[in-house]
Image (cartoon, rainbow, N blue to C red; front, side):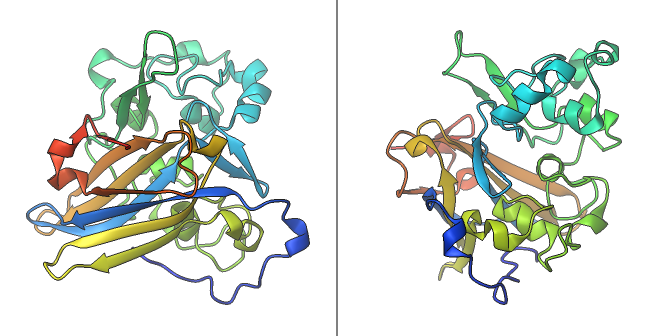
Length: 298
C-alpha cells in the first residue's frame, strides 16, 4: 500500500530568516470511503491545480494545468501558450504535453487528435465548465486517448505502469508515466522519494527542506464500520482561496484482474476559504451530493 509514506522526520527545520511569510492554506476531510466491490485501495491524491511551487515560492496557474502563468508567458513566443486555457494551440493536445515533448509552434500543426480519441477511455480526466471565461467553455484536465497513444500509453488504463500514480498526475509531477522505477528514487538526492513529493505537491527536482513549508500532510483514519476517512492539511491557496481548484483522485486495483481504476472529483473554492476545512462524503459512494464530479462547496 502506498498511502501515508513518511520519510521527513530526520529533516532539519527551515531557516526562519529565509521565509518571508507563511502561505495561506486550506484543508480537506473526506468521510466514509470504501473501495468498489472487488477492488482494493491503492492511493489517494489531492492537488490544488491553481497553485504551483517553484523555487521555494508559490506561483498562480490560471489554466490549472501545471504550468504557472509567468512560465506560460515566457514560453509563448516558442509554443504559443495562453495563460487562460490548458489547450492553447492544438485541439486535443494540452499545453503541458506539448511542453513536455518539446513540440513548438512550427511542429504543432502536424498533430491531429481524431474525434473518437478526444475523450478519456480510462475515465481519469476532470471535465468542467469554466465560468470565469465568456461562454463557460468546457475545459479538460487529463490525458485524452490521442495524447496517451502519442505518449506510448494505454488509453484504457489510468495507471499504465502500475506504479500507484495516475498517468496524468505523473506527467504533472515531471515523472515518466511509463516508468515505474522513477517513483521511489529521489531526483533531488534528499532521500525523499519522487512519489512522496508528487503527493505533497512540491517539485521533485527541489529538496524537501527548501519546500516543506508548502508540503501537504496526509492522514488516513479507519472507522468502526470499516470505511476510511482521508484528511489532507496544509494545502497552500492563493487569493484567499477564490477560484482555487482542488482535484481529488482515488486509485484502486481489482483483486482478480489487477486492472486499475481511478475515481476523480474536484472543488472550486470561494473567497475566504483560506484557513477553512472542506468536509464531504466520498463522492463515488455518495453521488447524490455531487454534480458532474464537482463537490458542492458551501
